[in-house]
Image: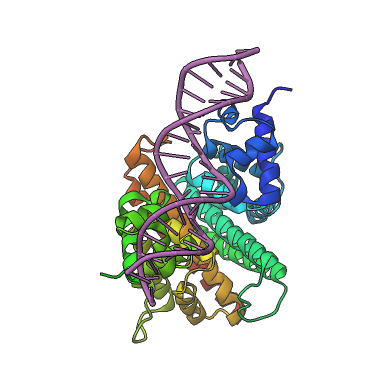
Length: 197
Length: 197
DNA sequence: ACCTGAACACCGTTCAAGT
DNA sequence: ACCTGAACACCGTTCAAGT
């Protein structure tokens, strides 16, 4: 059967989940599809574009457009969207890294920034400020999740430096994430209040 | 003259500034030092460790320990440290990316997280919360600066998508950075107030 | 102690030529 | 239209052997 762009991205996601980003090469991908390396370049411009498509796949669940307006307050909405984003990133090996890199390379078409900007605008921030504020939240989510994910891999794969408390890392990461988001929400609320005055 | 670890890191920083992270290879580095590739592995365990040393170099200026306690309020201190961090990252090509990657690989020894945690503790946040709050600020700084730097490179090197306002990008980036930090500071202040009650 | 030579096992990308 | 074969120009890392 003939190869599709969708097949290529499917296989790339499968390789990512099984071997991680460092071992996701065009040559390995070609082998897994039973095809010569050059064949991939018919379906995809280059590796960067492929990773962008993978990033879109990862984000799609979390950042699909909402069909009907949510009845929640803006802060609950922001927390939910950011949480869904984190979940989506965590649901694939090196997901946060792939998305962060693709975002930096401007290879992502899922409007994840806009999904975060909507609640921030609803909070009452000006058009000018909602955009950078949403970006700040996005940067936090990506950074925190990349960190969490790389930590998970480091200590699944060997020993971690073990710097201090022997607590469950998973709950720690979730708590840190929640705290960071809370700081943002409170900061946004404060800014709206002072702007209203 | 005999090669030193310091020489190797010096040359790596020079290559980074001139050609960027993507073109900073061990082989190129060896050539620039007039040495066989294998020679580098006497002075440095591997590429990751080398990049960690480069990251430490980049951070050293911004995160050197303060000799005497600053007379500033905690919020001014936090803004200053975060700003100095951004400046340090911007002062080397791909600086933010190098530091972010090295931080994720736990290859950085400059205590940049602690430098941010100090003002947060001084604000009145508990020991438990100051750490993740400082991490959140660090993630924001790294994400925002990586973004800013990759944008700089993309439009110095070609055309940028030009999505909207034809404003000066540099001022935009600085303003977005300042806004993000302000949200954090206000969020922290709010949290301290509610905890005090 | 420090470095070379040479190899091992890979990369991403291109492109004429085939079907 | 889609893919192969083969090449080009690279990688990071190791390690016996030299000095």
